[in-house]
Amino acid sequence: MVFQSLAEKLQSALDKLKGKGKLTEKDVKAALREVKMALLEADVNFKVVKDFVKKIQERAVGHEVMESLTPGQQVIKIVNDELTQLMGGTQSKLTVASKPPTVVMLVGLQGAGKTTTCGKLARVLEKQGRRPLLVAADIYRPAAIKQLQVLGERLDIPVFSMGDQTNPIDIAKGALSYAESHGRDYLIIDTAGRLHINEELMNELKEIKAAVKPHEILLVVDAMTGQDAVNVAEKFDEALGIDGVILTKLDGDARGGAALSIRAVTGKPIKFVGMGEKLDALEPFHPDRMASRILGMGDVLSLIEKAQQSIDLKKAQELERKLKKQEFTLEDFLEQMKQVRNMGPLDQLLGMIPGMGKVKHLKNLQVDEKALDHIEAIINSMTIEERRNPDIINGSRRRRIARGSGTSVQEVNRVLKQFNQLRKMMKQLNDMQKGGKFGRFPF
Ligand code: GDP
Image (cartoon, rainbow, N blue to C red; front, side, top):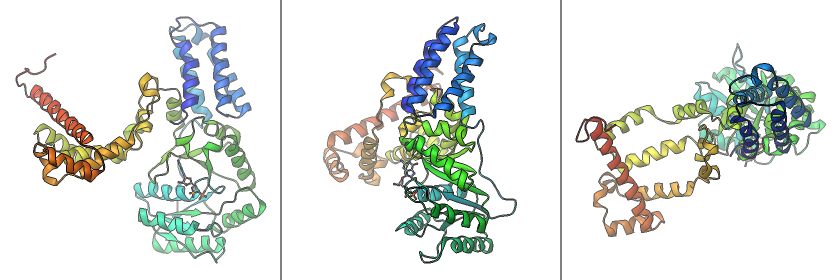
C-alpha cells in the first residue's frame, strides 16, 4: 500500500499521545523523536525532516495545545497541517492556456514512466472534455514512438509522429501547427530520456522549449528512487526550469521520501501521481488528502470521486430497481463486481477508508484479486439462461462451468452460494421495508 511503512510508524508514534488527558513537553518530544526517525527511514531529505519537526515542536508545546482537553488530537492535527504544507498545501492544477492549444512537455529520465504517463495524462484531459494530441518526440529510444502509438490507439487519441529521422525540434513545431489547424487543444509532448542527465539531453530539451514555448514543463520521476528522484528534480529545474512534477509508481512506494521532499527541496509542486501500470492510474495530487492517508485518517473525498468516475449512475439505479423487485441475476452480480473493480485495486481503495489501516486483520490484507478473476470466469462460463435463472444449474452444469472457467466445482458452488445469500438478504431487507412480516423495522 502507498506509504505503508511510513504510515504505520507515524501512526504508532502519534497514537501514544492520543489517549492522554494531559501532555508534558517530554511526551511531545518523545513522540516527535519517533516521527523524525520514521521520516528519515522513509528517505525524506534530512534538512526537510529537521525543519518539519522543529515547526511541529514549536506549535505543539504551545499554550493552547497543552492546556486543551484533547492535547493528543491537537498534536495530530498540527502534524496533519504541516504534512499538508510540506507537500504544497493546496492542489496545483494543470495550466490552461488562454489561447489554445496548451503545450505540455513531459521530460525525465529513461524508465521513469514518461511515455506511459503521456497516455494517462491525455486520458485525464479527454475525460475533462479536452481534445489532446500526443506528440512522439523521443526518436532515440527504440520503440518509444510505437509505444506511444499503441497507447494512442488504445485510448482513441491521435498521435503526431514524423518517424525517427526528423529532429525532435521540428517534430514539436510540426505538432503545434497540426494542433492549431485540427482543433486539438492540448499538446502532450513525449521527449527523449537518458539513463543519466547529460548536456546533450538538456540542450535538446532547451531547444524544444525555445521552439514551442510550453505552458507547462512537467518532470516525470519514479517515486521508488527516493532521494534520487529529488536530485533529478533539482537538476532538471536548474538546467531547464520545470513547472511541476509527476511522481510515478507511488503504488509501489511504501516509504514516501520523494513525495514528501520534492516540494520542499525544489519549490515545485507535484501535480499528479501514478498509481499503477494501467492507463486510468493517474490521480491529481491533493496534499491534504495525501497527508490524511498517511496519518490513517483515510481519503473519503478521493474515494467518492473514483466512484463517481467509474460507476455508471444509470446502471446503479437499474440495479437498485432489480434488487427491489427480486429480479437480480448472476449477470447483474457480475456487472456490479466489474463496476467496483473499475475503481482500482482493492487494497488502494481500502487505504482510503478512515481507520482501515488500523484494523488488525486488514492491515496485511492481500486482496485476492485472483479470486475475483475466478468469480468473473465462472459467471462468464455460464449460459445466459443459467445466469438469469441460477436454480437450473445442476450437478452436470456445475462440472461443465468449472471446466470452462478453469476452476473447480467447489469454487462454482461457492459463487452460487454467495449469490443466493445475497439474494436472500435482499429479500429480507425488502420485506422489512415493505412492512412485511417483520413490521416496518424490527428496531
Ligand atoms: P519512459 O522510459 O520514461 O518512457 O518509461 P515508460 O513509460 O516506458 O515506463 C516504464 C515502466 O514503468 C513501464 O513498465 C510502465 O508500465 C511502468 N510505470 C509507469 N508508471 C507507473 C506507475 O505509476 N505505477 C507502476 N506500478 N508502474 C508504472
